Length: 277
Ligand SMILES: Cc1cc2nc3c(=O)[nH]c(=O)nc-3n(C[C@H](O)[C@H](O)[C@H](O)COP(=O)(O)OP(=O)(O)OC[C@H]3O[C@@H](n4cnc5c(N)ncnc54)[C@H](O)[C@@H]3O)c2cc1C
Image 1: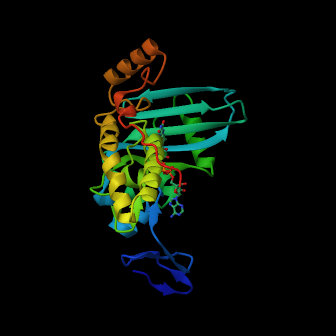
Image 2: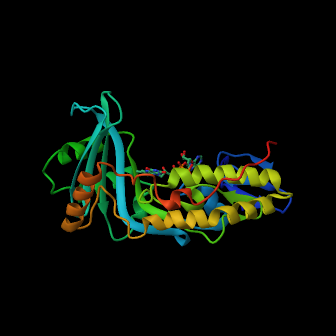
C-alpha cells in the first residue's frame, strides 16, 4: 500500500491481523497495535482504510467560509447577520478584541470538490456568489475574506458509513459520522464517541471486539442526532422569503437559537461508567 521515491512516502496502513504498519507521508514506518482516525470530515485515515470519501459523503446543499478580520465595526460580545434566500452573512465578536469573525454561507446544488485543495478557488467561489450584494457589510466581508490568511472553507455535509472500523483501524467523531452543524451535535458526538471507544477498547479482549462494542453502543445515538439535520435549515441561510419570516419570528419569540432543555436526541445515550485502568 505504500511507495517511496525522492525521500517521500505515500501514506499507508497495512493491517496483518496482529498489528498495523503505518507508513507516514514524511517518511518512516511504525507498527501499532491499533489505529484510530480522528481527522475530521475529510479524514485521510478513512480514505486509507475504507476508500474514497465520496461513497460516505452526504452533501446537505450549503457551503461556507469563515475567517478573522479587523474589528472595524466596533463590536463586542455580539453578532449580527444579514440574509436573503440562499445567502447569508455574519459578523460576530466572541469577546472584546480588535478582531471579529466573518462568515459567508450560501446554497449550492452540488458540492465543489474541486475547490477543496485550492484556497484561491474557494475565495473566488464565495466572492462570485455575493458579487451583486452591495448592501449592508457584505462588500466589507468579501474584502475581509480576500485579505485574510486564515480562511476556512468547507461544505455542509454528513458522513454516513455502514461500519466505523475495519480490523484494527477505527474512526471517531466527524471522520466516522459527521452530523454537520445543522444538527448542532458534532462536538458532542465526537466527545461521547471518544469516551465510549476508550472504555470499550480497555475492557474488550481484542481491538476488533472493542471497536464492535463501541459501534453497538453508539450507532442509534449517532443516527438519531444525524437525523436532526434532515430537512434542516441553517439560521444563517434560509432558502425562501417565507423561511426568513419564520426564522425571524422564532428568534423574536424565544430569544434563543437553542431549544430550552435541549432535544430528546441530545440525551438519548446514557454514558456507561468504565472501570479505571
Ligand atoms: C461552522 C461550524 C459550526 C459548528 N457548530 C457546532 C455546534 O454549534 N455544536 C457542535 O456540537 N458542533 C458544531 N460543529 C461541528 C464540530 O465542529 C465538529 O463536529 C467537531 O469539531 C468534530 O470533532 P472531530 O475531533 O471529530 O474533528 P475536527 O474538529 O474536525 O478535528 C480533526 C482534526 O484533525 C486534524 N487533521 C485532519 N487531517 C489531518 C492530517 N492528515 N494529519 C494531521 N491532522 C489532521 C485537523 O487539523 C483537526 O484538528 C460546527 C462545525 C462547523 C464547521
